[in-house]
Length: 314
Image (tube, rainbow, N blue to C red; front, side, top):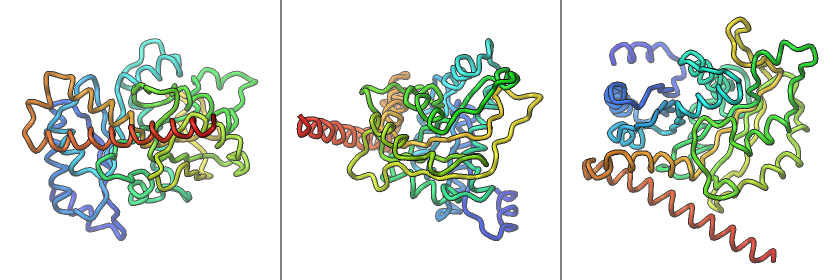
């Protein structure tokens, strides 16, 4: 902590922390202690967590994430392996491939903090844009286009349009960094941010047709403050050509969503592994149960609203 304090003292406008960690047992104990210390000393600063998890999620760590992190962007190891295999056509993905993809996604997440952009340009905006309810702070991430590097070596290679980057890849969830399954034919969302990156993006490309077609697959809560929020960063995407798995395109789009299914999916993983909820302390169980209660409340409310809309149309 002394090194962290010393580093922060040299900053003119310190906003908060981006906290990258794994949720396996060895890393989770360290990250939990660090989270507690950071929040106790810097309670008014935002903590944005990049949480990598596998088939096991430590209840102790999830409790501390929900209690002390302000925004949590979970990324599932198996989901990233599937993207490597099916989208990037890597036959046997390694941890190096997985880490490159995570780094590419986070390069886009933090793009507007490093270069001029009109959306998510500081840490506080992640919380205000994406978290309408404090306990529902689990954010899904999508990145497009994800094209194998070999394709860019063809003479006729052309970057996809803005519309083609968003549909159908986002609708089909082929570029999502978490393997959650939707129980309905549409998404139940609290918030959605689309961050476009590239020097050749024309604002009118992000037009009515794109937004209307995306809304066919999306249902927002009536308590959602903003619906779909879009922003452009005109800094060109960059990759290392000699080591890349991904084709260099002149534009990319990152989608961050606060989805009901993300909270539901992670809660179910925890509750299904060795009776984790029952073994947890009363305080930890209460925090996890609050997560479940809140997502169920929103889920039922949004399903009822959708059914009412269908009834009125008929």
